[in-house]
Amino acid sequence: MSIPQHIAIIMDGNGRWAKNIGRERTHGHYHGALNIRRIAIKAHQLGVKVLTLFAFSTENWKRPESEVSFIMDLPRVFLNNYLQELLDNDICIQFIGDWKNLPASTVKICEELLEKTKDNQGMKLVLAINYGSKQEIVKSVNKFITQNPNTMIDETMLESYLDTSHLPAVDLCIRTSGEKRLSNFLLWQLAYSELVFCPLHWPEFTEQEFENTLIEYESRQRRYGGL
Image (cartoon, rainbow, N blue to C red; front, side, top):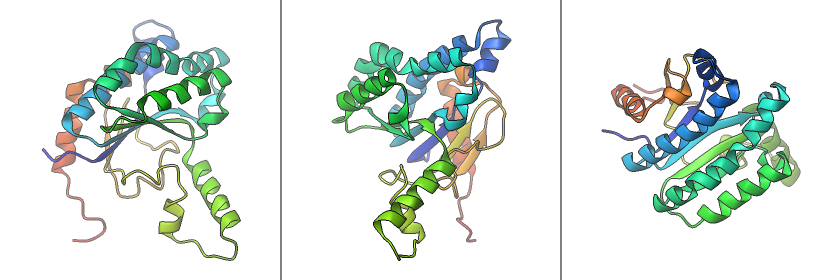
């Protein structure tokens, strides 16, 4: 099987999954966080180099305060329950987005995850938190203009200022829960990525379903505008 080097996932449907089984939306977010661990380890085992997950968008602040507060506490759950497993699998956690503007307690946990996994040499697990792609592009352009006045920007220069400048191009983007849109996620980075839309909600997206998307990816012909 041809394994994508970099996979991005829009983890959609946590709240709807919980509602379907008669539970609160936060129940879905909790189980969605648990599924990160399962899919990350499977991706690592299959040889994926980078797995980027859309965890919290800049637009998600519009949600009820109680739901946002619950989501902000999920990195702590991840640290307490799965850090050792991440270390055992040599997985390195990284973040993109304006995550340093999150609540102080959340930032502290994120920094601890970064510090404790920074020397791991295996797969990079990149969490996009407080992330919006349009905002990322605008921020990158403004930073470039500030540092390089009177210089015309090109694609290579802009890419070097993006949050993902240290990562390979995204080969495959998966969105769960049946929605077929990008929702302001990695708009620049997904320019030539293969897209797979899965009807399952994120908490029910299993390791086997993940492998099925890789089989779908393998069937695609990536021509990048050529023949």
